[in-house]
Image (cartoon, rainbow, N blue to C red; front, side, top):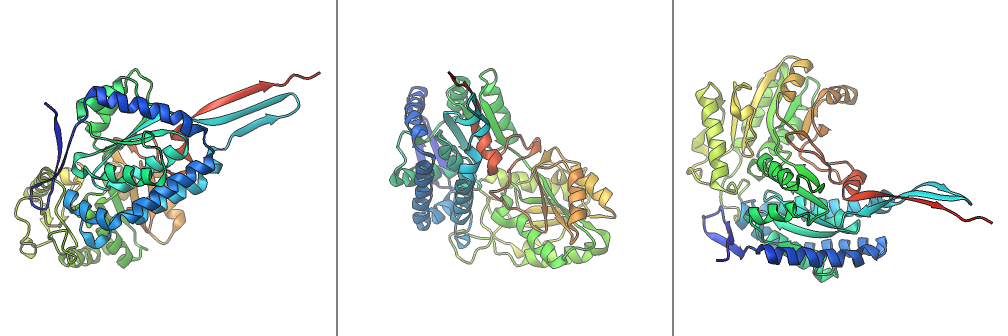
Length: 462
């Protein structure tokens, strides 16, 4: 019997979309066709590959009026925010702009006697396993540079955003990308692992849970397949005594609650210097009290449901455990009657929190944030590093030298000053500890999607 992969809409619990999972035989045939198409694709001039990929991105943009409500139905983000295409275009264009420089050969010698250089060679077929929280933004980080670098791409999306991969492939194919070169697939976990273990890919990029990343590495064990991972996070914000307080509150609270807190680099814990603590909390509470929880198809809604009830249940569990242990909830539940115990979950700010509470240690990935008072940079550094994760941190100060000094002490992939929750395509998107390893975007993103190949050519001289 063919297994169906289903997307259950968080709006009302109905089945929004379903697709049959590929059999192992069909999946292997698809990868084989991608491998054949990749050879011809890699022979095309780099400029032609860049042009076609950019055309694919443009075609995707033309679908935005359809894509935005689909995202709302599939994972609950309100339509008022207009989807993800602005970020998709920025990242794809940024990678296209640096491709020639990033992929050019390193010439060691070009003389009458020798030609010695290092070139970047595509891996072949790249498997991209994309998450549901930003289905287009996260996928484009790898899809665009992988194709530009001469790889074929097989894209597997999370079941929660089942239609996103179809839309991407539809757009890129319409723009002229060969159908076999860029494929969307529907796979169950066992088939995905078996494909990786069968050495079908030159590189695997996975964005998701720590457990999922471990499964990818176990599947690839012994195959020498490269695996890049972006996994969990518990990103901190630190507000110092010289911070622009209003800007800090606005940005950090938005980064904590936007997309119902379901952001890879969302802020999940905030540390505020004692002299600003009370004012910060008061301003934060006022902002959150103004949110409107509701149906994401309603243009007035600012916070939609969480993508799945089990995600909401985990946030409720962390919050209730913290309150039982002494944390103080600052947001009155009466302001959010739509929170009925299902996917619709009210935002919450917790004070009097400690690192003994799961809400300050485990990834929440929901609209709750704990705020702690600190008395020094040293205390803040120790608390920010007290985590198994390391994706980003957000430092708030007017002193860039101070921020850089603190940043060097932090175990993280990106140090932000006076901003948060943003991917700069010119910088490497990377993490440490249980956030995973590898890197997307920037020149380093191209390096991860290719391998070095050396040429040592001795010329015959008379």
